[in-house]
Length: 305
Ligand SMILES: [Zn+2]
Image (tube, rainbow, N blue to C red; front, side, top):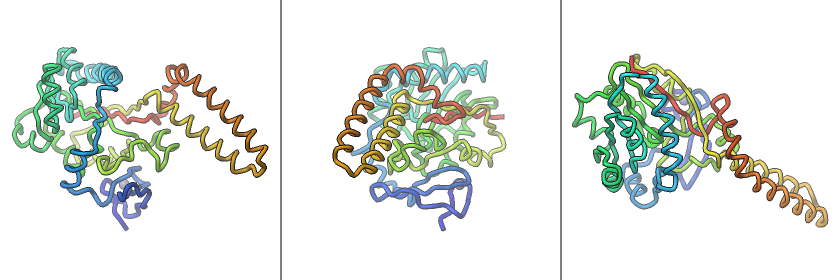
């Protein structure tokens, strides 16, 4: 039996095998975790050769829109906050938006290339380091806001990272965490084809319950708000998946060739109809995914008391 690294539950289940990597599921804290964890060498190789940063330029507009929403919330939660640290700052879109609101923003980015690009394009203050190295050299520093956007799911030991972040937060400071959501429609529908099961870089898929365990040992951290959000295409992905399953069912149930052809024609016309609705539908109704926090990304605002 393999113990859950988050809540210590001894009854975890082997759930998925993807490219020789195995994910286990913990039903108590609702977490998926990679086991065995990739070695430092494996990860280094992976990031060098295969990893495509999600914060790519094709997503610039949506990253900036989401950044504006997050920054507005952060400022409302700490009205006098001035300094911000963004861990894993990528190309610097979030940092750039933070600077525009008048915050004194610093980024940490392990990729030398991205750190350099971010400095050059947006005059951001980015330190080329990972969190542990940064902390080693900046133990005295404290920030009003710390953001980790699609970062925590990459670490081998999230407890350690949260402990460091807690030390870097000022009293009344806010930590913002954004990460793929275990309790999402997207995961429920896609299952083993889940968009964010990308070993070895995603070592964990968390839920809001996982975080209650992750911050339990640190009495100075209190969750202030839990939200979720989704990208429009996630709704379309879910609908198409449902449609595809329906189509397969029709094909399986029919043994007669004539009926089969007929059904293919029907499902084709249905597909075209859905595609026509793609744009209108995704613009308006993707927000329904977020009701009851079943959106694709989990967003946590955690206060240091
Ligand atoms: Zn667990």
